[in-house]
Amino acid sequence: MKTLITCLIFLSFVACKKETSPQKNSEPQTIENEQNQDQNSTDSTLVFSEKELNKEKTKAIKRERLLKAEDDKPNLQQLLVSKSFFKEEDLYILDYQYPYLNEKIDRGYSVFNNFIKENYLNIEKTENQILEDKELLCDTLKIDRFRDKRIIDYKIYNVNDKMLSAVLYKENYYSGMRYSTYLFDCVNFDLKDHSFVYFDDFFVANSEEEIYNTINTLIKEGIESGELYYECWELSKGDFKAYKNNFVVNDDIVEYYFDDCVICPSYTGTYSVEIPIKKIMHLIKKFNYHPEVG
Image 1: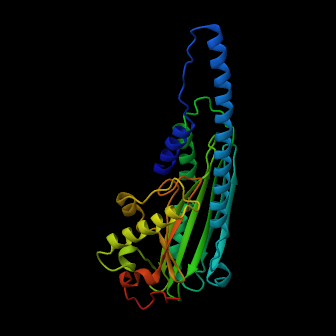
Image 2: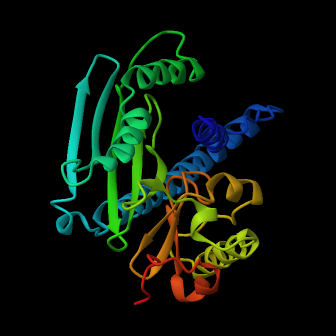
Image 3: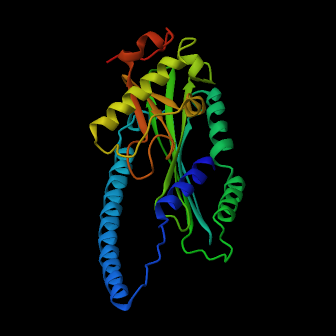
């Protein structure tokens, strides 16, 4: 909800135009001002259209990078079952793809499966959120120009035979909004102990500040490179505390995921920051199952 409100405020700010009243001292002056205004209006429209076109392109590239990223699904066919849920109503569409571990291999995998059910398959809660969002959008006329759509999909990585990393990404199309928004939840699961792995389990004590600074260094480098990072910004300490568990381990990187409008607007930048494990190896606990460095 925080992300939605932030994005709405941002988009509203961009959409607002400062109104000006032309002076009308004389008829010739009025005609001249109107002509200038028409020219300025045309120029502004062209600039605005070009900016919007660029935003559409970068948004498409940003989304494509996420969707086409390779994961370990093909190698986990016995362990992993991909399940789906689809529901279409007058006000919304729900289209979910989610991971489900094979409990025939280990009954303890029910811990992971129950977590998925409770957090992503509570349809009544989702329906209530959609109705609440519509109220926040001040839809007093109750005109549904577009149906809201909620899409859930995921990428999953098998760190080794003991740890599984998954990122679930939720794409939300809100009625009347120009861009969809993305939200991310990362889940790290210990296949042997049937428990979830969090920041303090994976990293050594008192490593928050260094991880935070490393993330911001990588973001700054991306901004300075100029490639798809325009209008992005560094991560705040408050947001780092909120997202410090939102990481997955993929081969030789630790990848942090952030919702839209946390480090970049929805139309540019990146959804994630990749930290090479070699860069932070000294901060990773020496577990028996810690990932091998490639």
